[in-house]
Length: 275
Image (cartoon, rainbow, N blue to C red; front, side, top):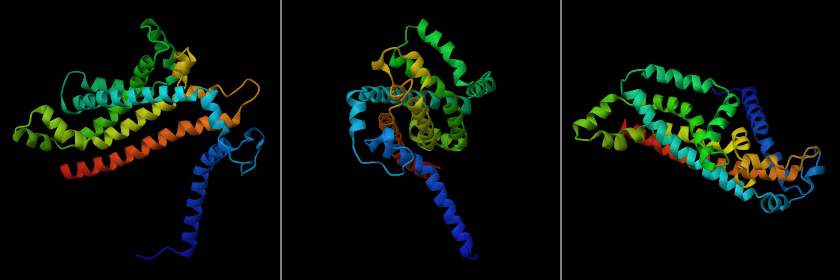
C-alpha cells in the first residue's frame, strides 16, 4: 500500500487543524471571557485583558448559581435513572415478546419523536397544573423522562435485537430464571446502548430551557439553563457572568461524558466476551 503524498499529508493536516480551530474556538472564547475582568469591553480581542475569577464569584454569591446547578443535577440524575430503567424494560418487551399492537406501539414511539417540543409545552403545562406539580423538581423530572423515553426505547430496542436468542436459551438450559438471565446475560450485552441513552437523557435534562422556564415559578427552583438567562438584561448583557455560568454548565456535561465513556468501553468489552 503506497504512502500518501506530501501534498495529501499537508492537506489532511490543514483540514484537521481547521476542524479543531472551528470546534475549540467557541470553548476558548467562553472560558477566556469568563476569566476576563473587563469582559464587557473586550470587543474582538483574541486575548483577554487579564485573568480573574470575579465573574465566577459573582454568579455564585449574587446569582445563586449553586442552587441552580444542584437543581439541574437532581433533575438530570433522576431523569437518567428512571428513563434508563423504563426504556430498558420497554425495549426488551417490544424486541423479545410478541403481543397485540406491538407494531402500533413502535409506530407511536416514532410519532412522538417527530412532535416538536414547543407543541408540547401548553398541554404538559395544563397537565402538570391539574396534578399540582408546577414549580416542582419532581414534575419537571417526569416531563424530561417522558421526553427522553421515545429515543431511549427505540435505541435500546436495536441493541436488544442484536443479542442472539440462542444466548438466552443457553442460559435457560443452564437453569437460569428469566430475571437471572436478564441480569447476568442480557444486561451486560446491552450496556453500551444503555450508556448511550443515559448520555442523551442527561444532556436533554441538563440543557433544556423552555419547560424549566415555563413550569418553574420560584427562583430557587430554576435549573442552571434558566439561571443563565438572568444575566441577560433588557438593554444590556453581563457577558462576564454569562460566560462564567456557561462554563459551569458545560463542565458537568464533560465530566459525565468522560465517566460514561469509560463505562461504554467496558460495556463493549463485556458484550464481546459474552457474545
